[in-house]
Image 1 (cartoon, one colour):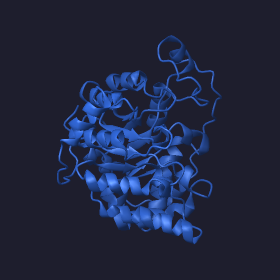
Image 2 (tube, one colour; image 1 turned 60 degrees about the vertical axis):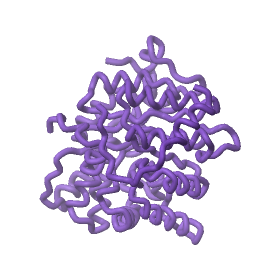
Image 3 (spheres, helix red, strand yellow; image 1 turned 180 degrees about the vertical axis):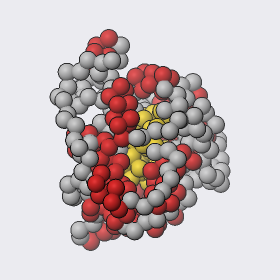
Image 4 (spheres, rainbow, N blue to C red; image 1 turned 90 degrees about the vertical axis):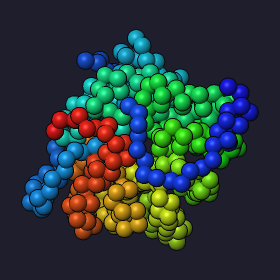
Length: 345
């Protein structure tokens, strides 16, 4: 599909009034460095302070998997120059999830395989009740990424798409013709768009606002608290305020994920307790969801510890247990309705 045809096709779609998203889609050798398992640092604290609460399922809204070196050599090659330095194969993830008591996860296509989704697709097909897929948008100028998105959703069952602004051609914004075509197509297909603002929300705020305004039918996920650290000066306070103000768009959700990337403190990231409280105050717990950022989090504090940190921060922020239930699984389960219904606790 040439770009003109692709753009005309999506521009013919009129934005619809936003409604809550309802999806209608459906042993490895490793030469990586080994990461020692760490004992839970919050287990005793959690046992002594925990309130009685029932959480139906724990769902991780943000993690990655990639092939082991053996798998890469045999079938799933890494993108040149993006060879991982940590183990991240599916069997390792399943081991970590079992230890942590996590029932399911949204797998985000990693840059290590770039636009070759075959490894993640294999995991989705092998464990359909465990995993849901988020593909990576290809903003190629020829418009080929629009057809790729459609195929990944309709043929391979992906339920979300990630916009990485740093993959756009130099000088181009996510609001260019291709970006709007991809964003509109996501809304048409009923899949949320995740934004990775690694270099700062302020660099992409206007683009996100423009896309949300023009296409209110497309659900938005802000990865990793939009990379907004607890503010320490006026500029950072303004940036965090802009994050909170994005809650005025009812289609915007926030991932409370990769805490080590946004905290200034070591585990358990206590400076984020007020951040968690403010996010829930602005968005409501039903638009906030926990994510680990596996496998990177394993080297930082451990996968089980990542789960426990959020419950700890919620208590420090005086959130009710019902809010924690939404953050730890109910939000993402509602967003991707029915996708983890067959998970057995």
